[in-house]
Length: 305
Image 1 (tube, rainbow, N blue to C red):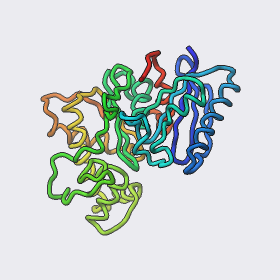
Image 2: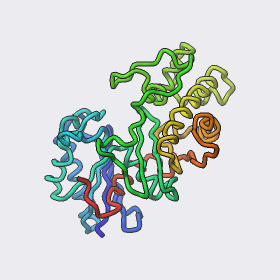
Image 3: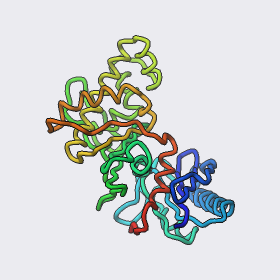
Image 4: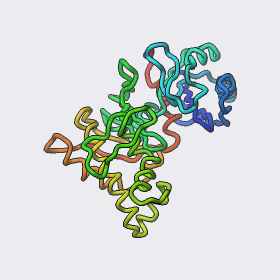
């Protein structure tokens, strides 16, 4: 099999990773993302792939992880925070540029695939991968295959309403998507900071909130308690519907160690089972999960369109 090449189209950098037949890293390269420049972004990807194949003297199958998603209507990119991609036929343009089939998936899907194949969820049959960062995303992998769904939104839990609201959750915040009270408005990094501001009148980054809580600040501690109760309720709905063996957390907020103890203890009150074997796991590959998952889009030979 040809080597697998993953491309992670980030807002500030474009990263390439080449994997060998056994998943070993052959090459890693990155360059700055041409800001607001769609043709420049295509050119940067083409140059990275060409240079990698020349250096390794091998051709590769190319998978791309992108912010946003492909529209099921016309194949154009939508909802990308790298706004120059929106409304563009990214897959078709890359296929024309690189003269080969391109597999493309949302960056949260790529994270989930990476962690399911050779990361924290590698022993699980069903994995739900979660991004808790600037936004909240998710992806589903079943028996090492990414589940994208007929509408290409499988795992998109961040834009469902936070379940079982109580007084401390009111009033729900308006999400950028236009809805009220989306999971993302509570469980993203800005959501955590915003909740602390609403309750305490102080603007703090999540890292500062955690640091102060560890030092005994009760206001910051209560902010984290509210967050983990919300995270437990939101993930309980996922368990009730999907019943995964493993939920793997990624993104900046996945580095908060207390979640892995507190959240499974809290979610049991909301899961419709007398026994809960789902494991909540921290990711293995960290910031590399997205680009690794893009390469692992070629973990079989099936077409994706």
